[in-house]
Every structure is written in structure tokens, then in C-alpha cells.
Image 1 (cartoon, one colour):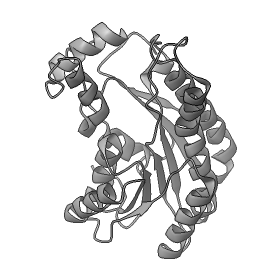
Image 2: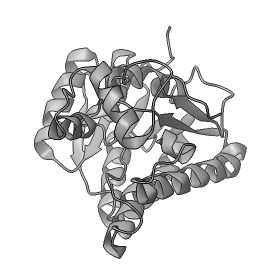
Image 3: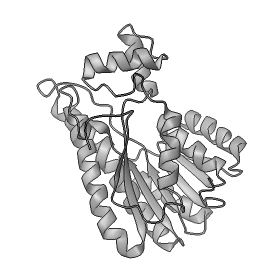
Length: 265
């Protein structure tokens, strides 16, 4: 399917690895001009080279810690200069990695979860809005999580931050409807991300085997899926790319579950 992304401009925050990179790859393969934003220059350089091979000839990476509003402002100012002040698609794939029970989490861990899971997105959307409003069409896609609808006792801070991000995204879809900027959320289920695979390996499970990984997730987190395996980052990318594309012309304010099947709606 042609997503209508040829020569469109797209920024993927957290696009140097995992589901963010999988999304950036889909955008690049459809002809978009892609910028990836992350904290690691080495990861950004590898990602940009990959995206150029896929068809985004001028793909590049920008270093920023999105928890720092000043750094974010500078990054989007540079994007505006490079792309004539316009941005068609903003994808926010950065999120917290805070794990721990309610009684074990410190105040600093709670603050970090909200800085990573909410404020980074807030900073990026706020800085990107002038560029998005100037474009002929514009989309925002934010990564939430299926744990906002099915709780785990070891993810209270992570889930609270993702729930806040989902709420802000819904509010943005209402605010920006008048500008015809579409805002949606994707809620991945148990996806074989680098961090999840690493966790599985640390508890004696072959994290590279999606069937073993799902079994471990069901036992440790209480989040089984109807399908007997974990998902892969490449199974998230196409969904996000569609939501971020011109082909998506009437879906806004939605929370799209990509979870291998679950009992929540």
C-alpha cells in the first residue's frame, strides 16, 4: 500500500532502536525524509545509515535528551531549518523503563518515569507544533502500552506514566482537530524489545525465542496474549507508519492495541 509518504518529512523520537527504529524503517521505505532523535550518537549514526539504504536518501540523526526542553527546542529548530519550517509526522517512541512494586519505588523513580514517559512527549509536541501547523498535512503518533488497560503489580510507575501520556494524547486530538492534525496512540503488547529480551536472558529464558519469551512474560508479569508468542518490533512499525501517514485521513483520538490478542478493549 502506498502510504502517501513520498518526500514527506517525519521525525521519530526514540527512533534509533527497537520499535522506534522499526517505525522509521517503514517510513523510509515508503519514501519519507526521516530524522531520528535519541541520546546516543553511535545508535543514531547506525540508524541513519540503515534508513538511507532503505530509501530515505537524506536521513539523519539528532542527539537530544527529550527530558530537557531546551535540547528539544534546539533539535526542532534545526529540523525547521533543514525542512523549510514544515513537519508532516511526529512519532514519539520514547518511554520509561521503570520496573518495581509500589512499595519498592522511590520518589526519584516515580519522577523519572513521568519525565521519560510524559514530559519528553510534551516537550517534543510543543516544539514541533509550529512545524506541524505549517505543513499541508500532519500527524502525531505516541507510544503508550497495553498495561494501561491491564495492570501489573510490578509496573505501577511505568503504567501511570503511559496512562498520563494516553490522556494528554486524547486531549491533543481534541485541541488540534481544528488544524486537521490527527493524533493517535499505539499500545504495544509484549514486544521483543532489546530491554525485554535482555530481561528474559537475565532470568534464564532464551529471549530470542518469542514463544519462550511470551511464557516468561505470562509467568512474571501476568500479561499473556491469545497468540502463544511475543510480538516483534517489525510488527509494530507498519501500524505506526499508517497512522503517521497521509493515508490515515480520518482516524484521530484512537488508542490502537497491537498485542497479540487480549481481553481488554
